[in-house]
Length: 194
Image (cartoon, rainbow, N blue to C red):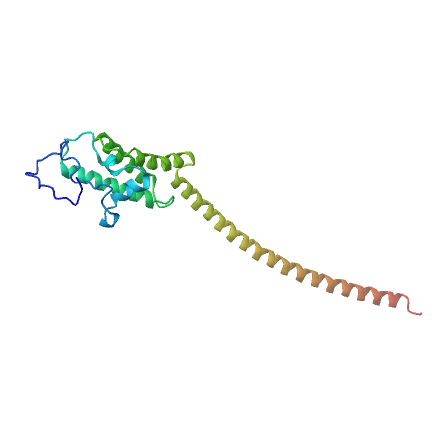
């Protein structure tokens, strides 16, 4: 049945989904994407029919549970689609993986989403944990900042040493000049006529 067709209201809150009413609350490809259903995009983007995703092998489930599972699956799919390497933590992916595995145990076809969750987890494992990378990046930035400060101190010290060397050179030239004058004066006295 399509979502826009009228379906009978459940007779009690204890009604369970059976073979006959299993797809009453699930949209089909006939439902336009403008209906606000994010779930519609799962089937389109992954080339998987929405009915295949939402058909449970265990059909004796309460409708509220089924709707909750579908909504959580859509939420996970949106989270996966919106994730970025630095923003999404490994813990998010692990929670999504466990949740999807539990939905799979209920009979929901979520293998394609599990693949999308496992890929970043495998990547993070192969190229180290992203938090380790972030910590190392912070440490290297701190080391670079400290080295930059030390370099400025050394440059200042070098400038001070250059100033001292210039003063010493000036004093040495003055002394040499004074010594030459004294030497010239001594030679004039020594070579003066008697």
